[in-house]
Amino acid sequence: MQIPEKLSEIIKIAKKVCVLTGAGISAESGIPTFRSGGNSFVWKGMPFEQISSAQMVRDDLDAVWEWFDYRRKIYKDCQPNAGHIALADWENRFEYFNLITQNVDGLHERAGSKNVLELHGNINHSKCERCEKVYEMSAEDVPHKPETCEICGEKVRPDVVLFGEMLPFEIFQKAENKSRDCDLFFIVGTSALVYPAAGLAEIAKYSGATLIEINPEETPVTSFCDFTLKGKAGEILPLL
Ligand code: OAD
Image (cartoon, rainbow, N blue to C red):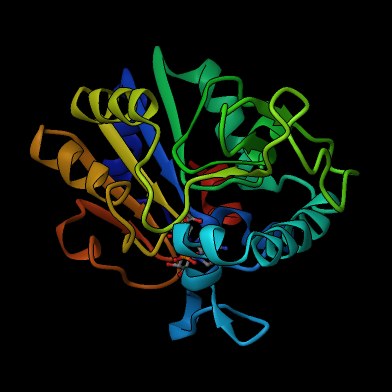
């Protein structure tokens, strides 16, 4: 992959840089994406949008836990890849750098990124359904624990944003502000189908940022990007 010369020049002088990542950045670490190649992930006969939904927490919390424990078991043995590591380095490279992720796998932190805005939560956190006390689990805690809240005795659930739920207000507001005020906005490894996260690219673009997509496939944002780098994040990010 040849990086366009014009883009190299823009990157050299950029001061404020934002990156939005999605499941694709972790694909090279062995974590399956949700929707690549025109297919959607199905688990035990259920589309992931169903098992990862607020309705499912109400109907069958045990099934939801089974799905999240299954994923935590996969994530435990996965390592950050060259894409995560490149982005961790970018914290020292640009004057202002903000990493925003839709991923819940924690691989950005494990690669050394210190300030990550996790829009969809973290798979190693759970919270009480009643008093909202948050519990941190180790990757080894499969199945999850505790099962009930140590304070009020209510059931705990994954501390992850599910379909039908709002994003954490403060984190999203910060992501929105950073997207509105950057020179470069990279959208990496996301199908750009899930809002409001996908809307951050539009906010950045209409606020004057140069928009760059890194993805082997086309997405709904491809047509309004300034640069499209078609390929794998783990190969392209280190080149940049
Ligand atoms: P998707 O699974 O929807 O999209 C993954 C994207 O990554 C696709 O566009 C792929 O083409 C691209 N891709 C695959 N391999 C790649 C690689 N090596 N390098 C770069 N790109 C690659 O994942 P997201 O867009 O992250 O939400 O999905 C958004 C949200 O939908 C997720 O956060 C999750 C899901 O429901 C929640 O769980 C709340």
